[in-house]
Image 1 (cartoon, rainbow, N blue to C red):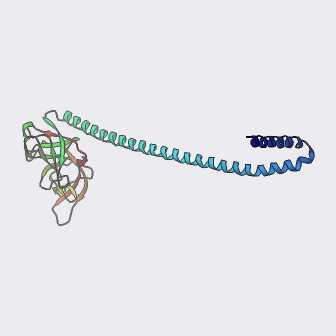
Image 2 (cartoon, rainbow, N blue to C red; image 1 turned 90 degrees about the vertical axis):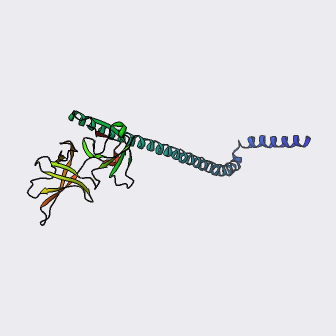
Image 3 (tube, rainbow, N blue to C red; image 1 turned 45 degrees about the horizontal axis):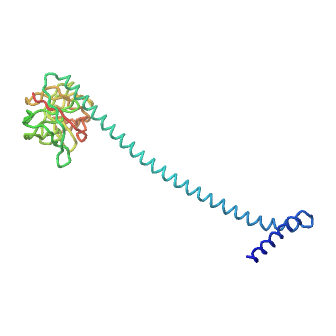
Length: 262
């Protein structure tokens, strides 16, 4: 304890002497040397501290950017999901509106709504399954429409479900009329899409002419829209024209249809 006290006293005395002598000019070189010897390490310590602080700032900035980027990606995904949902809802509303307009345009028809519950297993959309059957008054060959256009007719009927043969089904022949010329033809599916055959060569049809159903076979009510002419196909050796028809209904997006039950 005594030694520690003596050492402390010596240090204190030296410090006092240093403070006293530092006031005199002859002590300036010593004072300047001490300042330089302390200043250089202090400078490097300051530089190192600044670099460490900057490194931590960069690290925190990168971390914040990564978090914000993840949040933006999540928000973007949610917005895309909402946009897709709104688009699907819009399509469904448009189809329902067209169905309503069809009902108003054909008040004499008894229309039974049905939901689409399945498609043909081949994936070619030649048939679809609806959730209405014989208990709902459905029978084979009844007309099926969607968005104001003919899409096919009822095929096999079960108690609670039915199969709908679509216009693209090659086993289905549909009598149709060219709206302007009044010419009758037979519509069927083919590798080129929907075509109308047995049109006389001298028929003055044009691209864009509307095609509607004919009551020729007694199955389809007359005047239901089928589509419009998009191509006229003919060959010199043939005696009939073949017309390619476009039906605007996207069968793959259908969620509901109307069946003409009377």
